[in-house]
Image (tube, rainbow, N blue to C red; front, side):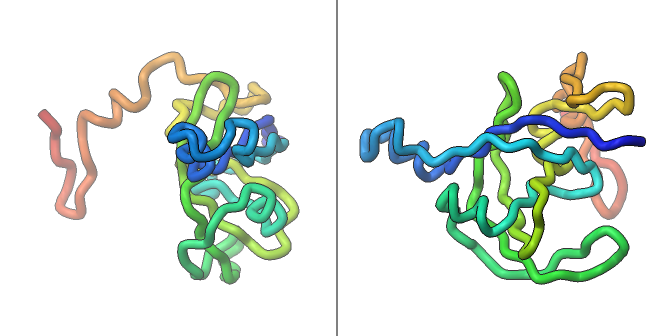
Amino acid sequence: MGEVRTEITLINLRDMAKATDGLIPAGEVRQITVNALVDTGAWTLVINEETRQKLGLNVKKNGEATLAGGIKAPCQTTEFVEVRWKDREAACEALVLPGEDEILLGAYPLEGMDLIVHPADNPPSVADYPVGVLRRRSVRRASGVVRMP
């Protein structure tokens, strides 16, 4: 299967809240539009240090990420960032990987925006059914599946 890429906009949610409260002008909300590689094997949004600095995202914690092939690498987790694709949006933390040259759009923000990746479609497709509603019907627990009322 080939690569799937799409244009997304990343927005600093802290700035957005300040603008909503009238503390900064809306034009000062830090955001960038990037061409991201859609990677369903990545859990969340993966950015590099340059992107983190442009967005002014604070680092919440330092940790370690397991990359493709089982390689472990140091990483940082940022505060929440808004991811926008066309008329869809989702908020998620971003992993900052040193030396990463690609922005990776992972499974969590894809699901948050109700997007599916179809091998024949580039860019991603909008699900033609409410994924969130289907997922709310059950919650997986270590002891099995728990049905929601």
